[in-house]
Image 1: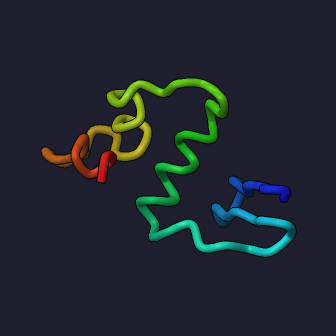
Image 2: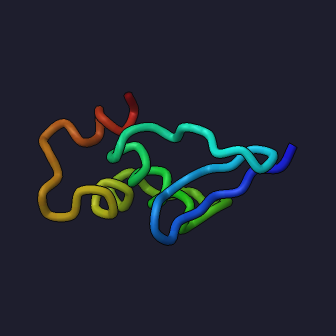
Length: 66
């Protein structure tokens, strides 16, 4: 099985050449934020900053875990 991710333009994932659903807009943002540092641990606070910036909601940490 091969898995490819596209980050320029539309954020997408392909499994064996077929596009698969990667979630709604915020989930795609989290995926892109994680793929920037593929194979490395991304601290939660850094991930929150990458996804929401200065406009992080009060429950951002819980949202990531959900």
